[in-house]
Length: 169
Image (cartoon, rainbow, N blue to C red; front, side):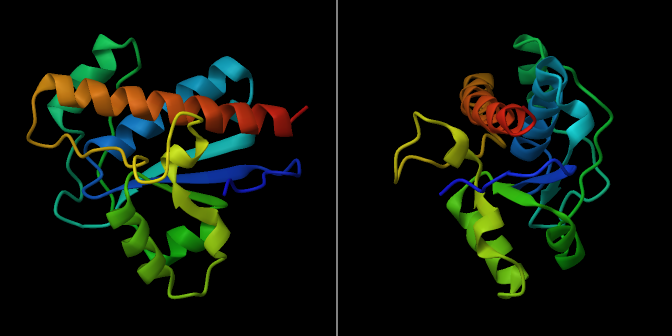
């Protein structure tokens, strides 16, 4: 189920993976750039978080930055952050890289936050199929796996930004 983005208020999107050094910062970078290209950057705030705090304060994995560069996306000065209940409350949409992180975010929400706003990132990818809708964690893998994860992120972000752009019309 895709979250309904139906009014003209600023939309806060939280991208979530495990350590906030690979998938979610790549998703943040891609979605921000796509939002600029679609002319909706002033209507959306996109941030990224991890469900684990192992890398808090650390930079994006160099292999993730390299994948972004290979595909022409900007690389920023990202610092890893762990997601907290206040971040969930502030977000309009929480998009998780995989089912493991989805379940952890739901646990963290403790039923106090609208469950419809917590989804898999690939719920915005029309090619995603149930059971094949996770973005694999490329941490510790080769460049090809980072590229594959980034391709899935791009497809999902294209759908997300398309939904945001349609909302603003």
